[in-house]
Image 1: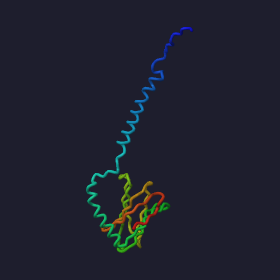
Image 2: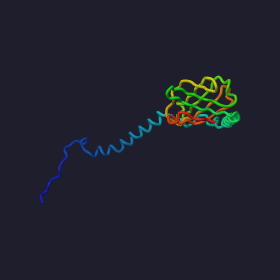
Image 3: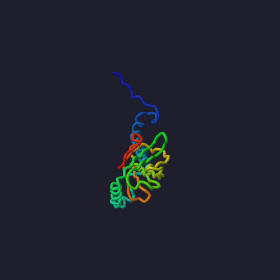
Image 4: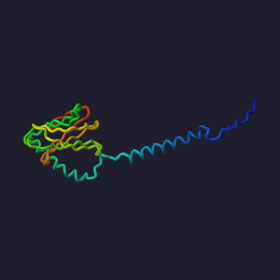
Amino acid sequence: MSYRPPIEDDLPWYRQFWPWALIALPATAVIGSMITIYLAVSDADGLVKDDYYKEGLAISNDLAKESKARQLGLEAQVRFAPEGRTLEVALKGTGVSGLPFLDVQLFHPTRQGHDRLVRLPAQGKGIFALPQTPPEAANWHVTITPPNGDWTLKGRMRLPEQTQVMIE
């Protein structure tokens, strides 16, 4: 057996594999935490309401308005006509004639900034319509109220699969 002296590595440290492998582990943790911080700060949490207590107290008022709509026999067909880009509501029931407009609120399920309030003018015979671009794809909550706010109709509309819905 012949004796071989150990081979000296004359490469600098930054050209070696092991220093970079050891630096990569904590570096990925730092990069991941930076991404997490960015996502947490840049996107507000739309699910939490500031006035949740007041909204809880207002539930009985909403139930009374929905009950009144049932007593009047109101039903509405809400429709987005994609070809004409028109939001249309066909309202049936007592007290429909003589309404100058309807307020239609579209609530995004998670993003409060995407909510819409549309005032649809009367077109005649219980039809209320206005040119309106359809909102983004989501399971939208739809609320219809008259000018005096006596009753409320509530329903859901899944866009873009469901372009019309019957609310009773």
